[in-house]
Amino acid sequence: MSFPSIDVARLIERLRELGDIGRDAEGRLTRLAGSDNDKAGRDRLVAWIEAAGLDVAVDRIGNIFGTLPGGAAGTPALMLGSHTDRWWAGAASTAFWAYWLR
Image (cartoon, rainbow, N blue to C red; front, side, top):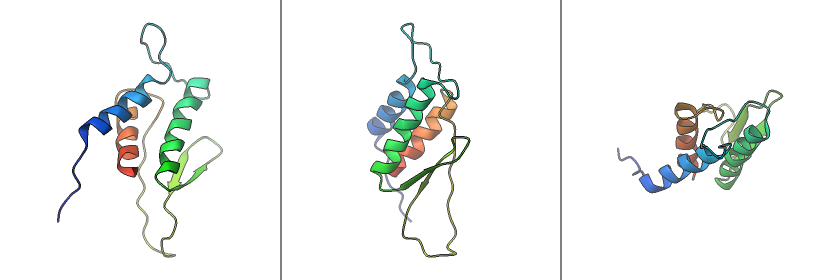
């Protein structure tokens, strides 16, 4: 079995892009749930998901779902999740999954 190679520059670009959303002039990151910065980070993630050709749904509490259309009914699903509201661990894993969507 072969695995796809990782374009490290592209992965770092996504990490930085998401990590820069909500930074103040001193470089501190604040992306509190429900804030404009939170919305900007979520909007960026939604744009990556849509660009990958997935359907996007957002539930009542703001969870974002990307679904690849065309699967057969009853086929097992793969679900991946993380946080966009904290840096480094949460945004890094979110950007990592968004990287693979591309």
